[in-house]
Length: 157
Picture 1 (cartoon, rainbow, N blue to C red):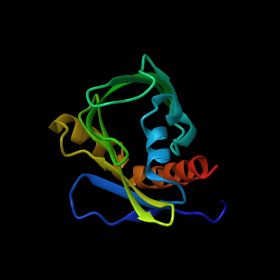
Picture 2 (cartoon, rainbow, N blue to C red):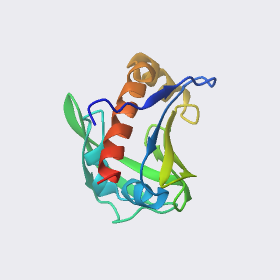
Picture 3 (cartoon, rainbow, N blue to C red):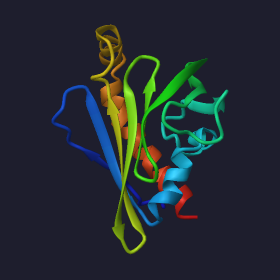
Picture 4 (spheres, helix red, strand yellow):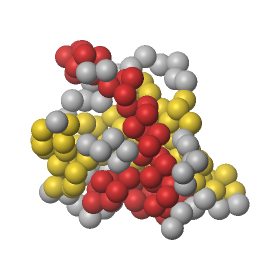
């Protein structure tokens, strides 16, 4: 897995970042990890996701789930699932208003293309300012790519 890389995508939308990888596993197996908030720390490439707090065992549309996070100092954040199509799409909205999405598309031969999207556009202006101020749009694509590589390793076991 040392040479495995995810592709950081060029995105034509402002305040949006995306990365993509092909995983040698069925979409449902990968989706099961994404829908399990307790698994998120295992494939977080940023090192910020510590553990799930007050979360259902499996996410669904409308699910709220807390996460123990750490960027310099520990903190907690609540997310809400705002889009959910079993086996192919999950999106949650962060307390700040931005979203994280995973789109899965099976391509045949047991392979699935997974695209992760970070979108700040739904957030209020103050949250958009914060994302710019903290340089999240510059940093997040690298972390997303690392996350997808970890998700690939987990899913191909």
